[in-house]
Amino acid sequence: MAIVFQKTEGLTGKPFHYCPGCTHGIAHRLIAESMVEMGILGTTTGVASVGCSYNSYEYFNCDMVQAAHGRAPAVATGIKRNLKDHTVFTYQGDGDLASIGCAEIIHAAARGEKICVFFINNAVYGMTSGQMAPTTLLGQVTTTSPFGRDASYQGYPINVAELLSNLTGAAYVERVSLTDFKNINNAKKAVQKAFKVQQAGLGFAFVEFLSICPTNWGKEPLEAMEWLKEKMIPQYPLGCFKGEDLTVQSLDEMIAAKKAEAGEVKA
Ligand SMILES: Cc1ncc(C[n+]2csc(CCOP(=O)(O)OP(=O)(O)O)c2C)c(N)n1
Ligand code: SF4
Ligand SMILES: [Mg+2]
Image 1 (cartoon, rainbow, N blue to C red):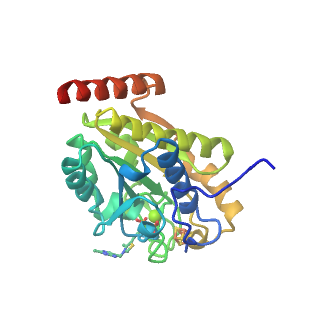
Image 2 (cartoon, helix red, strand yellow; image 1 turned 90 degrees about the vertical axis):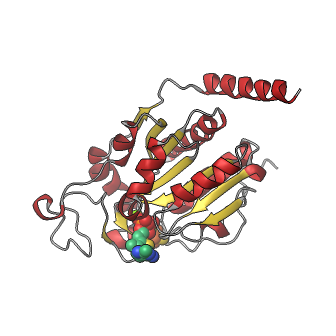
């Protein structure tokens, strides 16, 4: 009988603790499958952050390190600089990355650190019961913006992908969404492209995943998906903001050239 679905070796098999409908699980799977398909599971180190995905180190079947809140890009920098042949990624929520970790992410991108950052933007602090995040939409009700986010009082949402794409050290920046098959497939391509950008030694690679938090949005999962499409995408348009010209073929050629050069040096 043909196998139509199977577990990926890239995940440990430990059951996720995420709420029903949460898209953290989809993002995990895309990253895990990519590591397996690209043959890098044994040579990848992930850096978990603080947020609902704090114990993603229990789920990814590669080496994992836990960083303090917001500090994952700094931890990843240290790992990558010491293990240059390893693939290194961080997995961070919007509270972790764009609030307490705002300085770390900007400086890691500005330095052109050769790491991948996977950014889960669900427009709230999920783990701590749905407070306003820097990415919360104008008018969005959260526990700390009970009348809706008001720009005159709480400022405007931060478009992290656009912001980072202005930095010279950022080689690849893309925003994807986890709403349906087509977009989930695109998200997986973006994960693989980010890994290839790192393997080619080009610099900082960043993928933002528009995600849902049904629990703190107070919506059923399908309703939350519709809300994402209707409300989040106008504020956070999907697309590639940096490195659009980097095709799979051109990246593969750069990786092959890099490997050949390393072989020559050793010989
Ligand atoms: C130094 C510090 N400050 C604050 C907290 C509380 N805290 C834990 S998770 C979190 C926000 C997480 O939100 P996000 O990164 O968006 O992840 P999500 O849960 O939405 O996936 C905060 C403020 C903490 N654990 N440590
Ligand atoms: S609180 Fe939100 S982000 Fe956290 S696991 Fe539940 S649905 Fe996911
Ligand atoms: Mg969040």
